[in-house]
Structures are given as C-alpha cells and as structure tokens.
Image (cartoon, rainbow, N blue to C red; front, side):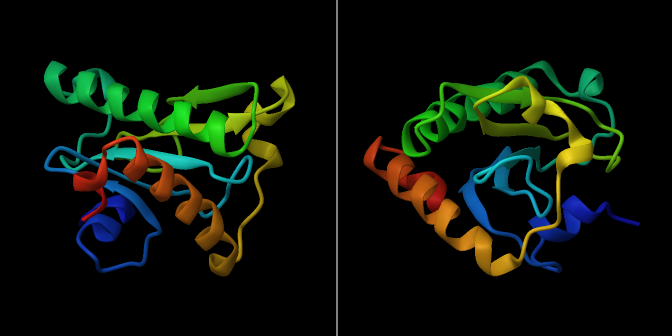
Amino acid sequence: MPSVFSSIINGDLPGTFVWRDPQVVAFLSIAPLTPGHTLVVPRAEVDHWTDLAPAVWAHAGEVARVIGAVQREVFDAPRAGLIVAGFEVPHTHLHVFPAWTMGEFDFRAATPADPADLAAPARMIRERLTALGHAEAQA
C-alpha cells in the first residue's frame, strides 16, 4: 500500500505543490507549524532518510535549502527551520518552514489548515522560485 505522500505525488490525493522534479516534490503541509510550512519529499518511497541514496539525499537537501531561503524572504522570517522527524508518515520528508522563535519547532503546536489557506503561501513561494530561475520545477 503506498504511503499518503506517494498518493499525493501520484495525484490520488490533493497537494499544494511548490516544486516538482524527477527526484523530489515539495508541497505545503496540511498541519503547518507556520504559514508556508513545506514538505520536501523524495519520489522514491523510502521510510528512513538514512536509507536514501546519497544523491537523492543531497538533492532533497538542496531543494530544502532553496525553499528555506525563499521562505525567509517572502515571509520576512529571520530563520528557516528544517526538521527530519519521520514518525508521522513512513516516507522520508523534510519539514521546511519560516521560523521566528524556537517554539515554532514544536509539532504539538501544529494545527490543521483549511486547504484554502494554503493557496496564498504556495503562490508566494512559487512566484519567488520562478523569479530565481526555478520555473522548470513548477510544472
């Protein structure tokens, strides 16, 4: 049975995507820590990040770095948070989010988002990614 992330990647479940390439995708979390909280997910369904092929791990990290820099800019955040937890879904994913305090690194503070509330942050991230030359990742 595919993970919920594989179902999102395959289009069987909805996702608010900001990045798609042959190795990874990125879409907004439905339980964001802060507005713009994005999950960078390898297309390969690998449970533990330590089991990812080194090239996929490196690429996922680079995509997370690019998205984090964009989040800092478009949300005027002093930091971009990065967490690899792995307990929620058995499919490697990197949580990338704009951060203003250490308290925002607490998943107990995450609340389900109305899907309509994800559209504006996603648009802001996609527009800046495109302006930085990452339009190919928007398809």
